[in-house]
Amino acid sequence: WRYVSKDDEAAALVEEKRSAQKVAIADQDGVLTCFGMKKNASQVVFKTLPGSPISKLQLGGLDGPSQEKVFCSIRCVNGADLFLCGNYIYNHYHDCKDENYFLSGDKITDVLCLPTKKHSPNHKWEIPNDKRNGGVLALETFDITADGVPDVLVGRDDGLVEVYGFDEMDEPVHRFKQQKEVGPTTTSQEPISEEVQAKIDNLRLEIDNLQQKVLKEREKYQFTAHSASALSAIPQFAINDKFALNRDDASYTLSIEVQIPIDNVLLQSDVPIDLLDVDKNSAVVSYSACDIENGNFLLATYRCQANTTRLELKVNRRAVWHITSIHYSKDSTQNLSSTAITASNPCHYTKELTCLMNPKPQLREQVSFHFLSTFLDTQLDCQYKKGEAIFKSDNISTISILKDVLTKEATKRKINLNISYDLNEDSVVHTLNLIHPKLEYQLLLAKKVQLIEGLKMRQKNLQAEYKKQPCHLERLYGMNVKNKVPILLEVLDNYDLQNL
Image (cartoon, rainbow, N blue to C red; front, side, top):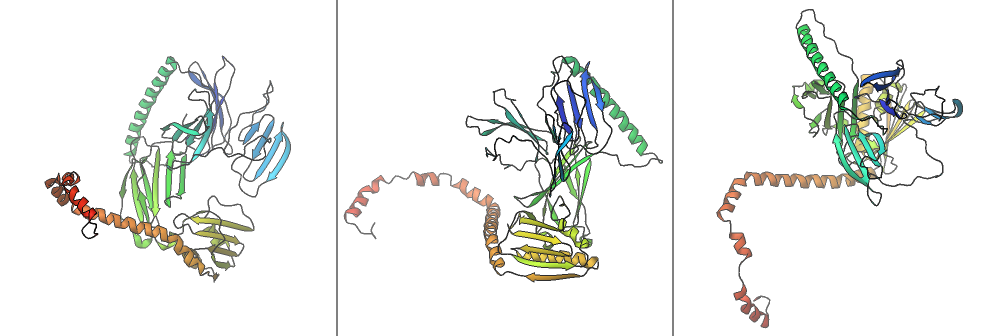
């Protein structure tokens, strides 16, 4: 089954022997579908009506004949206990009776039931993401290598599926991996019945029939598209997109995944950016002329190959004043300069502040953000409340950038801002110390590149000279100096540094 929406969940229902295998699937439309196989054909057991998006599907319940309750769109089930979470509210039910309640100050993303026998976790191992693969969407354990030790199955949002085993020291070892076109959203280790030849033949026949239908629909579409009375309409389909910051190289990765093949992707930017090469990207990019004076700095088109359903792009910002402050969350309290901004109506600039953080925080009287620059390792602290915003940073340039951006937005909307500064002179020395190793490395790298270019210019001359004298180096290495040994001994007997 192939789904690309963000929160699809699937689970296999374990049945007794001689019973048909059933599969339950929940999607972002709020539909829970359960179907099984009978006579080599899929049959729907039940299907619910659309509702709120289902973000988690979990199997559970009491042992025994009691099967009158079905729970869906929940976070975790443990026997008769039901743990339900919304964005900020947690509820615990035991046998459908309310037991506990908790209101979280931050957004709840998931909940997991753990035994309470131990009061502190033990760190076992960690697998770093050195190759900058996609984020982990699904985890499961199963003895897939049949060695008696459960393996760890990892599914990533870029379509990569990895299997890790364990050695004698219980350290994880990478077994194998496979790249898929669609990123997995969930896993299930329940057994699936073996495919028989008749089922395979039926599937092949269904595929052939579907291909014929697709060809007919394409011909019908081409005929309709050239008709004078034809109207263009955008089809409705789910899009799974992600725009993530890469801390290592201060770049952004844009991934787009849809249910239908992608023909073209148009990329437009109001700020100067560069498009970087991506190994997984086989699309052809072409650039169009832009009107820079009107703020249109980039207009590019990606033409994808046939049957491409996933596209990954990588962009990097150019060194311009209004976007040099790219930050990654971290706390800071040293060598800080600060600026305070007050306004009569804070709603106009609150949007500019919250754009530094995604997802947006819960609305409270006072909100704080802490960031670390991915380029210079400088830090930024943002605190804002009704009518006031305070920025603190160990980089004075960051304070200046924020002041210019907010002043520009306030001028557009005719808002009066009162800005005050408290500059720390130690911030300059601190920032220069952070810049020094990076600047030194880049200058050395630039000099090496210049040497490479110079050698390329003299490449033919150097190669020709070397070919004319191919054995000179070997002759110098192998020169016989035995006949000079008596003279050396005589000089040593009558030692004199100048003669030696």
